[in-house]
Structures are given as C-alpha cells and as structure tokens.
Image (cartoon, rainbow, N blue to C red; front, side, top):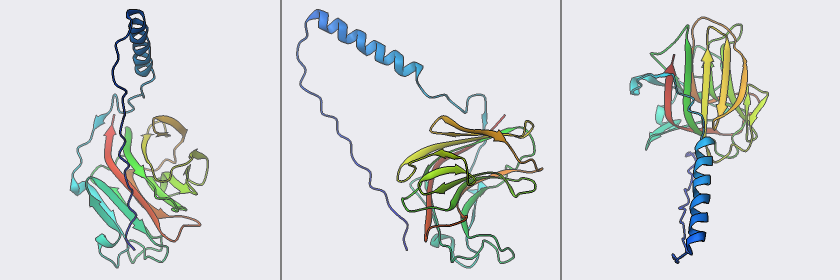
Length: 235
C-alpha cells in the first residue's frame, strides 16, 4: 500500500478594478488599513523559539526505526523536505529483541540530554482515518519509558490518552512545539502557537525526541504521519 497524497488547492485572489476615491473616503480607507495592520502586529503569534539556541541537524541525526524485517523505503520516504511514515498492526517491532508495538519513527540521535530546557519544533500532518497512534515522543521517563507522548485518536491530538489537546487534526498541516524543562520537571505543548498542555514530566536521566508513527491501543489498519521543518533547540 502506498502512502497517502494530499492535493494542494491553488488559491487565486480576484481584485476589482481600481476606481478613483474621494479624498475623505481615501483617508478613511487608509485609517482602516492602518488599524488592521496594527491589530495584526499585536496579535501576531509568539515566537516560542526566542531565547533558545538552535541545534544543527543533518541526516546523521535522523535515525529511522522501522520493522526489522523490511527495507526502510517500505515504511518511510523523505521527499521534497517531507518525512512520510506509515505502519500496519501486523508489522514486526523495530528489533527482533523486543516485543514493543510496531513503529516507523525517527529518533533524534546525537543530542540526548540530561539537563537544561530543550525544545522540539515541527509541522505535522495526519491523513484521515489514522487513529490509535503516537506521533511524537519525549523519550525517557520513570517508571514509564517516556516523558511525553502526543497521540492521535479519531482526529484529535491527545497527551497520552488524555487530555485532548486539539481537535480536527486530519488532512492539514499543524505546528507543534514541545518544551521540556528537565530541572523543573515540566513539559509544555503548543499547537499552532497555543499552549495546550502545561504539566509535570516523568523524571529519568536521559531524554531525546522522536517523531513518526508508533502504534498504541485501538489502532487503525494503517497509521500514517507526515513531518517537515524539524528543529531542536536548547537553553
């Protein structure tokens, strides 16, 4: 089965022909445009990366974990800057020495951390029908294996199984920022710039970021996610 494809609609603007305006109307129009411009400035989204230092990433930092018995290109494609992952419930684990659920994920390698404030930023897209799957993780926790999991259930983005962070996630690009403050044992999750989760982490000594598809409870017959513009930052 080949992965899904999304058609991008071309948006065309149609402007009416210009007409001469009376001076008063022109002044009122200019004032209105100024108000709109000022409003857009004050309502512009917060730059969540401000104060953080970007970490340089190259291909060596993107380690693909996929079913151990098949080639990478049967579960993962990287093209035009987009990481595309898919997985089936019948797939094998990523090694023959574990009984974990099937996954196709990228593990950010070379930047494990034990202290400081770290941030993951990326744009994700989930094809409709995908459910019961983890799409992003902060690995490392105690007594559990992870500090954070972002999952998809029936079109909603959840923190583990609950709470619901955002709805109507299918077939659109959305921005994810996850900020992990190790010292304060705090995790914040932002979706499209909005703070959707602010809670306690799960401790542990070493952490790293993962993204892709990792099956959870009640998964769909095929689970898929797309990711692009991945960044890792720290303080």
